[in-house]
Image (cartoon, rainbow, N blue to C red; front, side, top):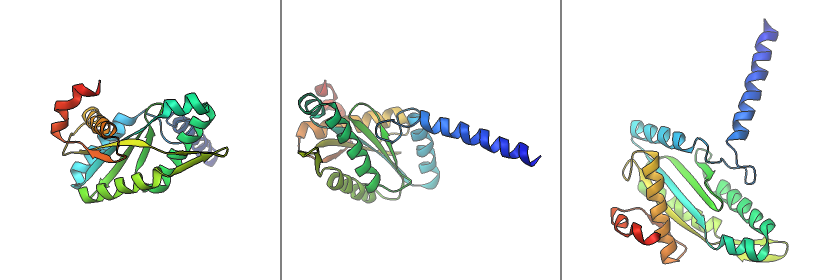
Length: 195
């Protein structure tokens, strides 16, 4: 009987390892977008129950295509890995980092008590991630645009929360000031300008 339980544990561990691998971005080691919407919706439900907030930060590297084109894909890959590592070192273990697209990351700040706390974490992201990046003796400042949307205040479901953080990120990119922009309803009037 004991060996049956031991075998069951091994099978479960193998299954969990496969699940973890399927949900992990191979290059950066952070989560990929598989299961992102479900996790956001679950976190929003938890935030509502606990009376807390969930902040979704949408981070897009500025000039990434130029880095790849002029310095090579190795350099671009190392830049992505460095950004992921810096994000991990900046955030709490309960926060979740996703590589959303080629040079886009989403960060979920879960169980945040006040909007002031969100602002403090965002300031940490801005100061810790945007340091000089050095690879094979070449230096490059890490530049990115950052948009933030908060649940349940801005939106109460994953699609809208991602959309609103994306809109705020484009507002940050438009201003080109290496600052975070928090979503507000007025941004919806400008949404046609981003395309």
